[in-house]
Image 1 (tube, rainbow, N blue to C red):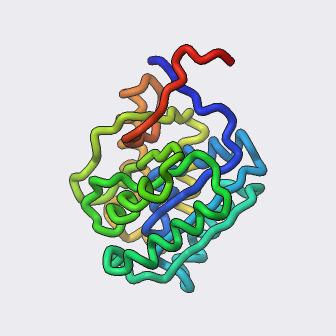
Image 2 (cartoon, rainbow, N blue to C red):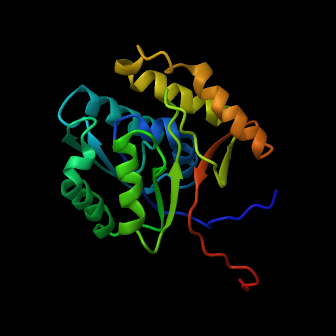
Length: 217
């Protein structure tokens, strides 16, 4: 499979509706980014869970995923399940991440997600980050809304194990969900890995990219 590389990435914007969305949907990719550039600038915006145990869990997860990063993590306290009703607040928080001097890579939920909070963040992202590479991640849950993905980030077994450890050790409040277990996360990652000839993978929807075919270096 032909690999299109981004080149070195020193800044990334991470957008989520809920604490744990990023670890589930893109935790392996975040681990790889942080390993490649320990001083990675990370601007992360999470719209719900602020001021309580969920925020503490999210901060613990980011400490595990990118412990040496220049991390700017904002966790708002919008009501879970009501993000579209707070559109202005959500968009202002995402715009603030852009105006902080964010780099060219943005990770956000996929816009066909059945959960209204995820979908709202996914829809806002490309309207704010017009000159960035926006990759929309998928979030495994009970809804049957997995997208037709267009981009893959292969994960080796060690990275996949590290991702599982982040999820299971950082989010004890979610352990009661019947989908919140290693088998579920490994199953989807293995399917995505098969699709790109890798042990495991995370998959994204990339609605718009610019190619540099034929460009001299």
